[in-house]
Image 1 (cartoon, rainbow, N blue to C red):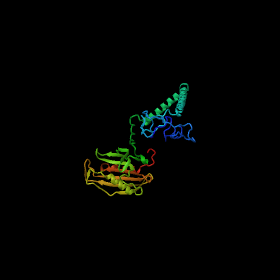
Image 2 (image 1 turned 120 degrees about the vertical axis):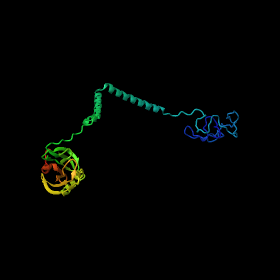
Image 3 (image 1 turned 180 degrees about the vertical axis):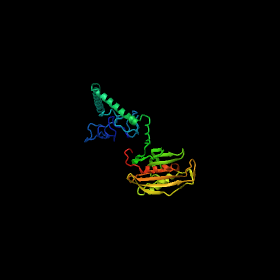
Image 4 (image 1 turned 45 degrees about the vertical axis):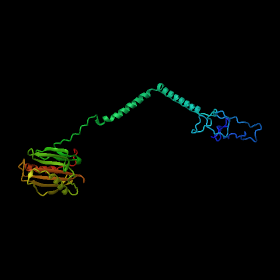
Length: 334
């Protein structure tokens, strides 16, 4: 902007017209766009526009910006040239929208209040009942299975029947041999090479016993092969003998003898041998006879019976072998 407008109401050269059209300022001589010729009534005279200091207008004089003008601010078409035209406003539309929203909210609150205070209050009881039901369901797991903060008592191990030895997993019952045999462990006990086992003992002294026990062939340490019962019996004998005669001196054993047998209609092998030694503490015995019975129960599981009778109970040895061979695999009480 080099010169001030030629009158207060004119638009500065190059500035947009607030009414939508760009109009150039009138040039010297009074010409305005649309005028065909010079204005007849126009008479040139001395310029009437004065500078702010009141001195006559001098077109060659250097122009200084008016007081209050900031060249760094964007141009405003109405700054310092009279009141701007009235612009359309949208405040009325926003106020209308707020008014409509307020009315809708008041109507919704009124409807809710009428339903709550004048409607059926029976729903309140149903809601409370539902909450109580939910609370009961959330607390129910604490009562399920008797879980009240105290651990459930463990199931008691089954007791010896006093008439037979039981192997529950394969449903077998073996009679107790003749003589003064006492419960030793089980039923349901695991002692390699047996599992799910039950055993009785004949106490010759407090530390010297004869042993009689039955169970499921474990297979954990001794390999069970239903197609080779002799090898299965030999493997079971090796595991059972490990540590069985650790307290004797000069231990020896005879060669194992294998005999094919049939027990309750199922194929089996009876393996027998004698263990001997030169001396031991706690007994004057010098030998002990052992018999191992392996029976193929179902092509997968094997029955394993062990009878080992010390010299002090030699008269009971044959009764232990007979008891093993009398095992019943279809017992209803198993």
